[in-house]
Length: 306
Image 1 (spheres, one colour):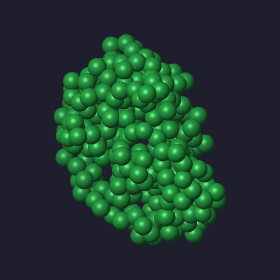
Image 2: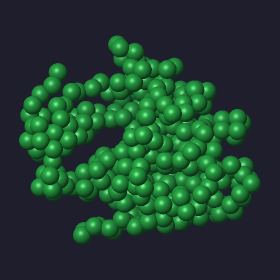
Image 3: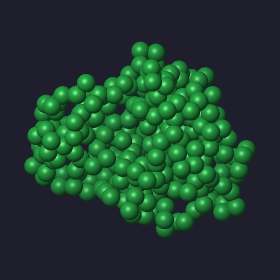
């Protein structure tokens, strides 16, 4: 099923210009605080971690320090892990799952692993519960060509300057009902394309990098999260979000070639987690716990199999 008039901004068949982007931005309302939820939370971390500002996001009305937490006693002899959340700011458990991991589990990796955790890549989107940044660009299609927007470029430049060899990268996401109700229609309207509704999976799943999928790694995450919440079943075509199911809860998707955050490094073990927060079978706490379980399982698998 498709429909011609499916979004209040734009003209069917015509990509947005500056006027449509401005009209879209005017509809976005701040609903929560990055300063309170993320910046303040980062000031209360264990002493084994230090907070680093890797960039600054500025606009006419907003200013956000871009922050990460990393191991204070960095040991070049140890493997390094990157955890990112809030690449899509509306995906709440990505942000709060990363923060929960820092508070409850980062200490477990002292002397075993160097950690870099970026809990909220897109603070403007986090505050407005929005998928895009303020200019209607998708941060999770912008990690290429040196970074297409400030949010991606700042992190890419910081990582490139350090030149760490990364063993594992976990990028924490959600798939929500609002993808079907708001964000997919907005994307089609923005690009002047026809909108074809898709089925939203009910449950947790992971998208492994098709360039280097590491099936056993992906399966280890599914096994850990299955103890917390349910795993998404395939649809009638054997797919999840249009991708063929490889094993329970696991699909392969392009990462580096499309500018997804999970493909920003050469980490051997990389994945995009997808929690479904709108399920009647899941609570917000379970969603956060699922993200933490995936991170811990990923780190432990990588350490055991490097």
